[in-house]
Amino acid sequence: MEKKLVAVFAFLLVALWAHAQFQPAYKHAVRYHVGARAGVGFSSYDFDESRVITMPTGGIAVDYRVASVPVYVESGLYYMDMGTRGKVYYTDGYTVDEFTSHNHSVLMPMVGSYHFYIGDKVTLQPFTGFYVSYGFGNDKVDFGLREGVGVAVNNFYANMGVNYGLVDQLSEPFIGDGHHRSFFMTVGFNFIGGR
Image (cartoon, rainbow, N blue to C red; front, side, top):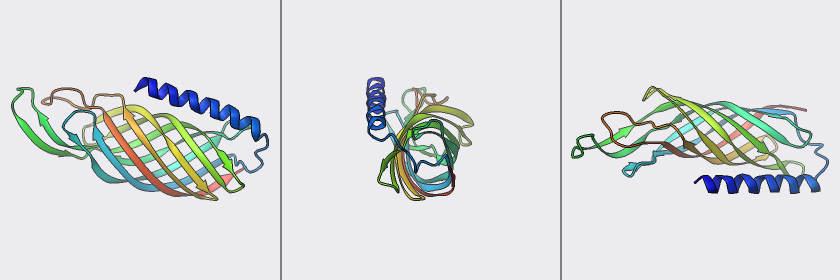
């Protein structure tokens, strides 16, 4: 997985450099955006018996341009159910239990994005970075990687992406490690923006 992430990051750097060479003027790039997002998240864990649960997700996003080219830092606060369902083997090695675990969480991403302008009103916005979350279901903090792509048309916004948790979220009596994985899709509206 690390090799894939490095390859994606290297590709993005080359793409950003190439794009900057051919679009020197970003007269339409606003300085910041504030918007609302809502959508659906597909959450599971990386152990064998984990199955996906589908739940709504949503929140508030804020981004700020940090360079003369359209490079942005984005954060916000989101709700996401970072749970799963499936079968689990207990530490005795024999007992099997089916379960559904709803881990209602508050998630704060910290990602960087580059806004590729496709005409005056449309931008393609790949993003990559980190997230930190607190799960009320398991009373644990998670930290992980977040990447994806968004598209904006005027003030309307849509994105899709993935979260890769780096902190083991399972505890006794379960055996093994369980790292959160999720795929999300949201739509939204940027109701504040300024130059």
